[in-house]
Length: 121
Length: 109
Image (cartoon, rainbow over all chains, first blue to last red; front, top):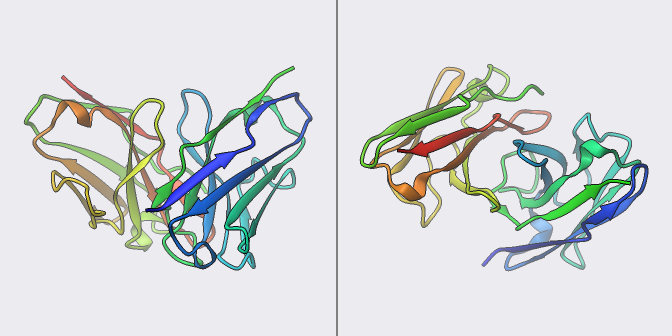
């Protein structure tokens, strides 16, 4: 069974940093592209960032480009999102999600339960 | 990428059928057969209901079906049940990044 477990969310002040992690199990992590998707309170889904299976290609939403960095450690079956210069509008539930292929920005098939990031002073 | 366009809300009575549309462009919905649909209940993670326009993952009821015509994809739910009340999102592949629709709230009357 595919399992994706996010961690690292919490309360952070505006301008602060936070690193999210996503522990994957139940599948061969190293052969799938992965995503971070967020959902602000009462709002819709937004793709934040994606990374191909070997980490060779990434993309970022324009709203986070230059502030967030996605990475993965295939030896640890873990996906990361380093978030910096956090703003109030970054407050959301952040989901880790697995793509269906190693590359190409196809919609995810599997999702974690999410971790809440709260940005407030 | 601009979000795909979905109706904000749809409603139907138990047993009826409803259709949710998802309109994009030739750069996303119309250009590829890679449209997915997600169901999301309050406080829960999204659940994949349809992928590649028409395919259902194992375990998803055959009351859910997908289709596409031109730049518009559609999700049809037949034999509406109370548990179908949820938010529904479409998503499409593009060459640069995937894109979501704004979401549709389905109310079962």
